[in-house]
Amino acid sequence: MLTKVQATLEGILNGETVNVETPTWAIIEQTVSKNKRLLAQYNQLTATDDGQRKLLNQVFARPLPASSTVSAPFHSDFGRHIFIGERVFINQDCMFTDMGGIYLADDVLIGPKVSLITVNHLEDPRYRRQVQPQAIHIEQGAWVGAGAIILPGITIGAHAIVGAGAIVTKDVPAEMVVVGNPARQIRKIKLEEN
Image (cartoon, rainbow, N blue to C red; front, side, top):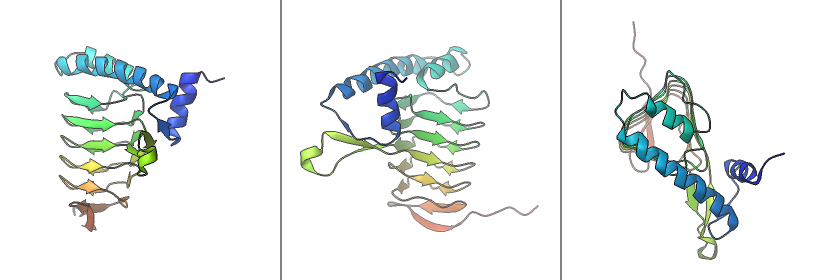
């Protein structure tokens, strides 16, 4: 049987709307507070310090694979809903707003200053104090360029490239290059001939 905290977190990952003025929000705030403390410590350590990986393993719900790298400074508001595959590289100064779930498949590359945003407020002013979580999925081998912003509910297809500074408001098909604001498809990726 799930505890209240587990049930709340599972519901959020399933996209349940959360009102910031309810007891559910207190559960979220506890996670946020712990996450802030752990990441403050993480961002103060040197890249060669073994303590960094131990801290990240307390932030994330699952241990960070030994083949993956998260460069400091790293920022996240929630932490527990970041899921990282093998050989993932996350460059410095990224912001993951991950309450809705961020899923990075194997071999994903994330450039510096990338923002992955998985929550949005409801448009109707009567319900604007509620947040709607929606997961971001970045599939195998995709590359997100420096300063790009990926909005809630987006999937970046396998081996796709998101150009630096792009703002992604729609799903990106596999092996496609997108650029701009809002991001638009410009071409398929180029394959090098041997």
